[in-house]
Image 1 (spheres, one colour):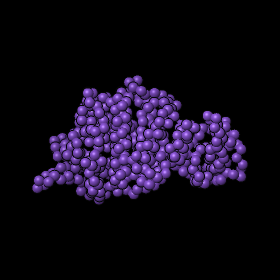
Image 2: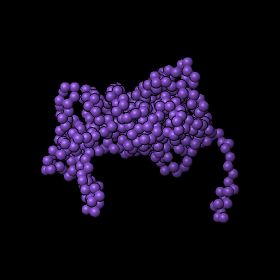
Image 3: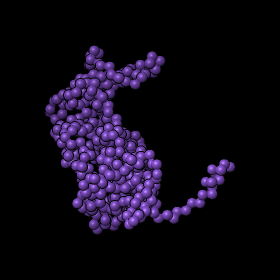
Image 4: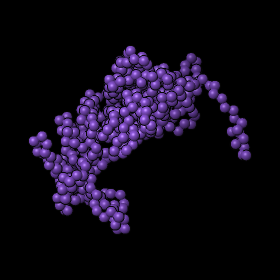
Length: 441
């Protein structure tokens, strides 16, 4: 046995220090929570009076959000915020897991909508202090995802086209930052509730301060003339994938071979784009839509024998950009999967903790708040360049999951953090910039 091993084995372990903080870096997003007035906003908006566990909703929502920020995926993970001196870096009283479970089960459909209103107002406040797009253009990506569950005890869980049992929330994300602008827990196909969801989404971002041009991107699950009509009525641009049916195949076959333009594609394959029009007839009205088509195939002669034909991907759009640029813009819709992955893996949505549907809907709203708080913290705290992707696990590792100790020096509480921490300068800059934001009164 090596000397190092003998040293480790002789090290006595005790859990008896009430001044230690396991996730001391939570002081950074907690500072932003104060500036946004989150606890008081929840207290003023979410009305659960008369329901068991409904009192003091503000500190309970903040407890859930902080738990998710610290990496919690289950309600009982909130206990880690009650250990040591962790509550001293948080601006609210942390509630027990049993209290939080009762609180979530108190939600009904109307109360979930009240919590949605909290998410919308928090978005407006964050954008007002510098995190928003302002008068600039903003692209919104629509998608749905599957939150898989196991067993038959999850109320409202259903099978979708993937034959996976779970919830199927609708999500709208901001393309350049990954913020979740709107979320709705539900079951069923992508089109179910899409029209109403879009109307609420556009109204929300307009109220939040997005005064510039808006464009919505979506995949084929959202394709419908009703959605296009809604976006056009709201004066929002759109780029939506269409399912390849017989009508689309006919329009593609009519494209002249000379119209196809080669585009850059990964090695081993080739791709070309072209455009045509799609005639739409509905409600005794006839019109034409711009149809952009991308076709791909394998370029290597050996591999090409496995799939010699072109494969087609088509979308309709009202954008007037050149064909190649329109195709590249639409392909960037794939980045929505990064935001969804981060919401699941980084913000607690990989698990729906309750057997009740509306409790899980409230958990989704808390996950959205935590997800967005990390992005606003990164942007307003200048944690990394604005054009760099925010990954919650990276931010948590570098800035949240810090071991610290709260000490008293001449009557002043001081949070002592590890010496030689690689990201100490960034941490202190972010904390200073967030503290400089105006307080909500």
